[in-house]
Length: 155
Image 1 (spheres, one colour):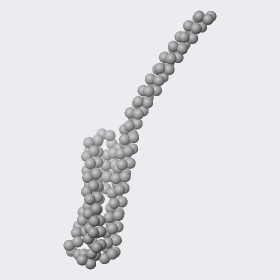
Image 2 (cartoon, rainbow, N blue to C red):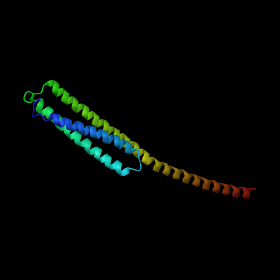
Image 3 (cartoon, one colour):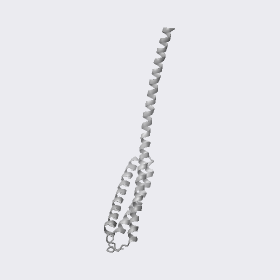
Image 4 (cartoon, rainbow, N blue to C red):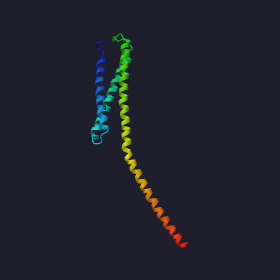
Protein backbone atom coordinates (compact mmCIF):
# COMPACT_ATOMS: atom_id res chain seq x y z
CA UNK A 1 0.00 0.00 0.00
CA UNK A 2 1.37 3.35 -1.02
CA UNK A 3 1.62 6.31 1.30
CA UNK A 4 -0.25 8.62 -1.10
CA UNK A 5 -3.20 6.21 -1.28
CA UNK A 6 -6.14 8.17 0.17
CA UNK A 7 -8.34 5.05 0.33
CA UNK A 8 -7.66 4.34 3.99
CA UNK A 9 -8.44 7.82 5.25
CA UNK A 10 -11.63 7.98 3.17
CA UNK A 11 -12.60 4.47 4.29
CA UNK A 12 -12.14 5.51 7.93
CA UNK A 13 -14.27 8.63 7.37
CA UNK A 14 -16.98 6.54 5.71
CA UNK A 15 -16.89 4.04 8.59
CA UNK A 16 -17.27 6.84 11.16
CA UNK A 17 -20.08 8.45 9.17
CA UNK A 18 -21.84 5.10 8.82
CA UNK A 19 -21.59 4.51 12.57
CA UNK A 20 -23.01 7.99 13.13
CA UNK A 21 -25.82 7.26 10.65
CA UNK A 22 -26.67 4.04 12.49
CA UNK A 23 -26.84 5.92 15.81
CA UNK A 24 -29.06 8.62 14.30
CA UNK A 25 -31.20 5.92 12.70
CA UNK A 26 -31.71 4.31 16.12
CA UNK A 27 -32.79 7.71 17.48
CA UNK A 28 -34.99 8.23 14.41
CA UNK A 29 -36.78 4.91 15.02
CA UNK A 30 -37.53 5.99 18.58
CA UNK A 31 -38.85 9.34 17.44
CA UNK A 32 -40.94 7.78 14.66
CA UNK A 33 -43.30 6.28 17.23
CA UNK A 34 -43.66 9.51 19.20
CA UNK A 35 -46.38 11.97 18.27
CA UNK A 36 -45.27 14.78 20.61
CA UNK A 37 -41.77 15.23 19.12
CA UNK A 38 -42.67 15.90 15.50
CA UNK A 39 -40.16 18.76 15.05
CA UNK A 40 -37.34 16.62 16.43
CA UNK A 41 -38.43 13.75 14.19
CA UNK A 42 -38.40 15.95 11.07
CA UNK A 43 -34.97 17.37 11.92
CA UNK A 44 -33.58 13.87 12.56
CA UNK A 45 -35.11 12.60 9.30
CA UNK A 46 -33.44 15.38 7.30
CA UNK A 47 -30.13 14.92 9.11
CA UNK A 48 -30.17 11.18 8.48
CA UNK A 49 -31.01 11.61 4.79
CA UNK A 50 -28.16 14.12 4.41
CA UNK A 51 -25.67 11.81 6.12
CA UNK A 52 -26.74 8.85 3.99
CA UNK A 53 -26.40 10.91 0.80
CA UNK A 54 -22.94 12.10 1.84
CA UNK A 55 -21.82 8.53 2.54
CA UNK A 56 -23.19 7.43 -0.84
CA UNK A 57 -21.11 10.11 -2.56
CA UNK A 58 -17.98 9.04 -0.69
CA UNK A 59 -18.60 5.40 -1.60
CA UNK A 60 -19.08 6.37 -5.25
CA UNK A 61 -15.78 8.25 -5.14
CA UNK A 62 -14.04 5.25 -3.58
CA UNK A 63 -15.46 2.91 -6.18
CA UNK A 64 -14.48 5.23 -8.99
CA UNK A 65 -10.96 5.46 -7.61
CA UNK A 66 -10.67 1.68 -7.43
CA UNK A 67 -12.09 1.13 -10.89
CA UNK A 68 -10.42 3.92 -12.79
CA UNK A 69 -7.12 4.30 -10.99
CA UNK A 70 -6.05 1.40 -8.81
CA UNK A 71 -7.27 -1.46 -11.01
CA UNK A 72 -5.76 0.03 -14.12
CA UNK A 73 -2.34 0.52 -12.54
CA UNK A 74 -2.05 -1.51 -9.30
CA UNK A 75 1.77 -1.53 -9.35
CA UNK A 76 1.93 2.25 -9.32
CA UNK A 77 -0.17 2.29 -6.15
CA UNK A 78 1.44 -0.85 -4.74
CA UNK A 79 -1.93 -2.60 -4.41
CA UNK A 80 -2.40 -6.31 -5.08
CA UNK A 81 -5.55 -8.07 -6.27
CA UNK A 82 -6.42 -9.20 -2.72
CA UNK A 83 -6.39 -5.58 -1.55
CA UNK A 84 -8.58 -4.55 -4.49
CA UNK A 85 -11.09 -7.28 -3.60
CA UNK A 86 -11.10 -6.16 0.05
CA UNK A 87 -11.79 -2.59 -1.04
CA UNK A 88 -14.62 -3.70 -3.28
CA UNK A 89 -16.05 -5.77 -0.43
CA UNK A 90 -15.97 -2.73 1.86
CA UNK A 91 -17.92 -0.78 -0.77
CA UNK A 92 -20.44 -3.61 -1.19
CA UNK A 93 -21.02 -3.93 2.58
CA UNK A 94 -21.31 -0.18 3.03
CA UNK A 95 -23.85 0.09 0.22
CA UNK A 96 -25.79 -2.81 1.70
CA UNK A 97 -25.95 -1.06 5.09
CA UNK A 98 -27.05 2.20 3.45
CA UNK A 99 -29.79 0.43 1.51
CA UNK A 100 -30.94 -1.37 4.64
CA UNK A 101 -31.31 1.90 6.56
CA UNK A 102 -33.06 3.61 3.64
CA UNK A 103 -35.46 0.68 3.17
CA UNK A 104 -36.31 0.59 6.88
CA UNK A 105 -36.92 4.34 6.84
CA UNK A 106 -39.20 4.04 3.81
CA UNK A 107 -41.14 1.17 5.37
CA UNK A 108 -41.59 3.05 8.64
CA UNK A 109 -42.71 6.19 6.80
CA UNK A 110 -45.24 4.19 4.74
CA UNK A 111 -46.62 2.66 7.92
CA UNK A 112 -46.89 6.10 9.51
CA UNK A 113 -48.69 7.51 6.49
CA UNK A 114 -51.12 4.60 6.65
CA UNK A 115 -51.68 5.16 10.37
CA UNK A 116 -52.10 8.92 9.86
CA UNK A 117 -54.54 8.40 7.00
CA UNK A 118 -56.60 5.68 8.68
CA UNK A 119 -58.27 7.94 11.28
CA UNK A 120 -59.36 10.30 8.51
CA UNK A 121 -60.62 7.44 6.39
CA UNK A 122 -62.37 5.86 9.37
CA UNK A 123 -63.96 9.20 10.24
CA UNK A 124 -65.14 9.71 6.66
CA UNK A 125 -66.45 6.16 6.56
CA UNK A 126 -68.33 6.57 9.86
CA UNK A 127 -69.90 9.81 8.65
CA UNK A 128 -70.97 8.12 5.41
CA UNK A 129 -72.52 5.21 7.29
CA UNK A 130 -74.38 7.55 9.68
CA UNK A 131 -75.64 9.64 6.78
CA UNK A 132 -76.80 6.53 4.91
CA UNK A 133 -78.61 5.20 8.02
CA UNK A 134 -80.40 8.52 8.46
CA UNK A 135 -81.51 8.50 4.83
CA UNK A 136 -82.72 4.91 5.13
CA UNK A 137 -84.64 5.74 8.30
CA UNK A 138 -86.29 8.69 6.54
CA UNK A 139 -87.22 6.47 3.59
CA UNK A 140 -88.73 3.86 5.94
CA UNK A 141 -90.76 6.55 7.75
CA UNK A 142 -92.14 7.83 4.44
CA UNK A 143 -92.96 4.29 3.33
CA UNK A 144 -94.81 3.71 6.60
CA UNK A 145 -96.75 6.95 6.09
CA UNK A 146 -97.65 5.95 2.52
CA UNK A 147 -98.70 2.47 3.66
CA UNK A 148 -100.86 4.02 6.41
CA UNK A 149 -102.52 6.31 3.84
CA UNK A 150 -103.13 3.37 1.50
CA UNK A 151 -104.42 1.25 4.36
CA UNK A 152 -106.83 4.02 5.47
CA UNK A 153 -108.16 4.55 1.97
CA UNK A 154 -108.72 0.82 1.36
CA UNK A 155 -110.02 -0.14 4.77
